[in-house]
Image 1 (cartoon, rainbow, N blue to C red):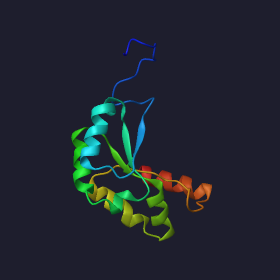
Image 2: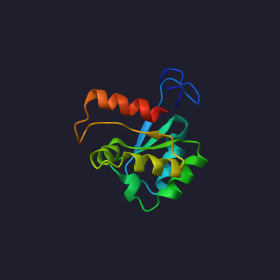
Image 3: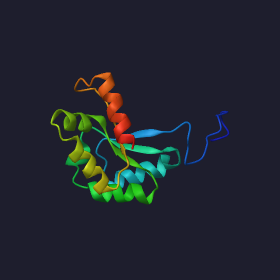
Amino acid sequence: MKDLLKLPVRTTKPRQNGITHILDSGLSVAGVDGMVEVAGEFIDLVKLGWGTGVVTGNLEAKLARYKEYGIPVMFGGTLTELAIAQDRLDALVARLHGLGLDYIEISDGTINVEHDRKLELISTLAK
């Protein structure tokens, strides 16, 4: 099937270009296994969306499974926005470090984050 169409050559992991970022909207560990079976070679980063990072009952098991597959995980922007709105961003970042996560999304989809503040957050958190 791969010979059916001419497709561009895909770089190998770890990629610097053409990064594929997917959304985990509450997968089970078995769902993670299935997704990686089908598309794992293309997945560079997984985002736990819409606050699932704090309400998912299988978080540690899921993070361990992604780690086994060598796929980094991040919390999504909605959770970050809630932490900003509640002045709890430092606590959220500490939780991320405790879970061994290196990435966090900074967005402004549910609250208004001034552009300069957003840039400041990105700069600070990038360190």
